[in-house]
Image 1 (spheres, one colour):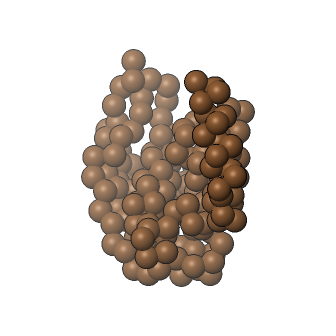
Image 2 (cartoon, one colour):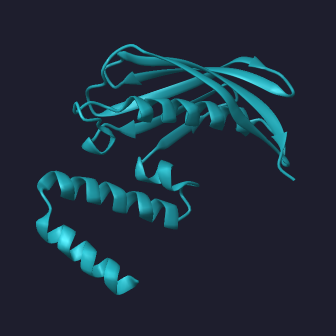
Image 3 (cartoon, helix red, strand yellow):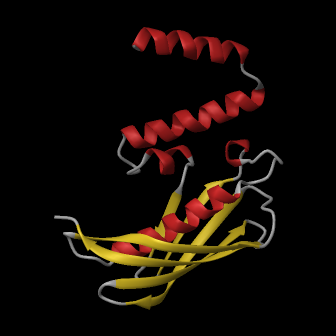
Length: 161
């Protein structure tokens, strides 16, 4: 398997455009972060997701690169949804004790604008924090401060043991 991957990698590398090389570099950096246990998921790793968490909010940031573009050459709405859900999920789970986790039961998104610049930030804050349910709001902005999307997520607390 390693030899097959090496051969495929070398073929891709030899035929790569500058943009391909940039994306490959991002993916390799993400995989290294995962291997070094700096992130918990491959998705977060491949997006080069950074997080800042407090008791009342969570902000996740990813770079705007062609890796997250849709066919129009702009950040994909599904990526925005994913980072909003990630920010809300991190916030929901950071306050729970061992043996419990919060899972998304509903996600409602309104897209407002197209992201430009270098980064996208999703910030989540509690709208309601109960023992079994939470409602969390998230706003996505680009590094110019433009609002790209707003979302509300409902979360249910489950036992993991």
